[in-house]
Image (cartoon, rainbow, N blue to C red):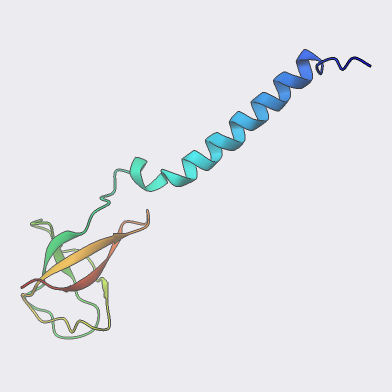
Length: 101
């Protein structure tokens, strides 16, 4: 018995559905890249007026103070510390990783 290919309309619908599935997966994998948000850890300086809690910082030499940012428990923030700040997700926040030597 001879098997004929599926109708053109069915093959087209299957192909389009596969392309949409692959595009959705690609978009979810590249969301951070396309956001314009940094992907690498950046240098920062803890606010000179910092006393306790989550510190604010000048990220990557900026003139404006931003934050407060959470920090790793292994690091105890101190006013004026030069630190490494890691961008987190696409929600435009950072986590302070620790002090730079």
